[in-house]
Length: 473
Image (cartoon, rainbow, N blue to C red):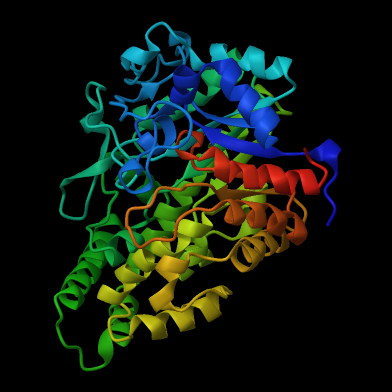
C-alpha cells in the first residue's frame, strides 16, 4: 500500500522531561526534521517513569544519544496546571507534580504553541493504572492525601495495590482530568491506555483478585450479581492456583483440573464478566466525555500487547467492539522486547494451568492459536519478534478486526525497556523494517513508543529512512 502524504500520521510518545532537558525547540527540530514526526503523544499525568521520566533501563541499554544522562528522581503527578473548577466532586484535586524541574512550568503551555506553529499536532497520552505499576519505573511514593481510601479490596478483604475504578471519587478524578485538558487546551487528540489485570489474569499470575470494595459490590448487586457467591468461587480458583504453583499432583493434570474447578464454580466467570464490562465502561465514558466537549477531537485506544499474547484477553477484547468507542487504535508491538514479554506471559500459565507442558510445546500451540509465526521458545528472548512477521501480522489482524471503522496506528517499539540482558537489543534495521511492515500491511500510521527519552537517535534514523522511501518525509 502506498501511503497518502496528506494523511500522514507519524506519532511519538514523549515525556515532559525531554522538553526540560533539551529545550522545546531542540526536541521539535529533532523530531520533525531528523525523524519526520508530525504528531506528539504527550504524557501529561503519570507516576510512572516509562511515561514521564528518562530511560528506566539505562543500566542495561546505556543512556541514549540525547537528553541528560542521569537518573530522574520523578515524584509524578500532573505536568500541567489543573483547573480547580473541574475537581469539586473529587478528593484528588491537588495532584500537581512536585518535581522541582517543573516548578512554575505547564508542559501543555510550553509545547502546544510551538508545535502548532510548526504544523505538528499534539495528543495527550494517558495510561491507567497511574500508580505503582511494576516494571514501569513507578515513583517511590504517591503524594495524594487519602488515596489509600479509594483502593480496591481483594477476595480476602485486604486493601489492594490499585485504586478501585468503581470508587466515585477516583472515577470522577479521571473524568475531571480529561475534561480539564480537553476544554482548556487546544489539543488535537487524545489517546487512552487501559492496562488493568482482570480477576482471571490476577489468579493466573498468582495473586488474589478484586475488586470487592463497597462501591464495586454495590454496582455488581445493582446488575443482579450475587457478590458473595462470586467471591467464594474465586477463592476456590485461588486455592487451585496456589496448589498448582506449589507442585501438587493432579490425577487429570493441571489443565483439566483447572477447567473442572472453573466449571464447578461458574460464578467466577460471572465476576470476570462483571469486572470486564465495568472496566470497559471507563473507556466508553471517556470517549463520550471527549466527544461531548469537542465532537471532532479524535479519541483512540493504546492497546496492551498482552491482548494478542494472552488467548483469554484476546477473546475478551475484540477489535470490532472497540471501534464503538475509539476513532483509532494503537496496537503495541515492541518487537525487540516482545520475546521477553512472551516469556513472561507464558511463565504465568506454565506455573499453573499449563504446568504439564514444556515451554516449547506450549509456545508452538499458542502461536498457532494466536496466529504468531516467530522464533521457537528457546530462541525468542534473544531474537525478539521479527517486524516482517510480527508487526506486519498484528497490523493485518487489527485492520481485519476494525473493518474500516477505525484507523490503525501501529505502536512501533524503539528502545522499549529491557529487564533481561539476554533480551534482543534494538537496532536501526528493526525500526526501518517495522515502518515498512506497517504500511505494507495497510496501516494508517505509526506511533514510536514507548518514550522518546529512552530512544537512540541512531535507531530513529531507521524510521526516517523508511519514511523518506515511502514519501512521508
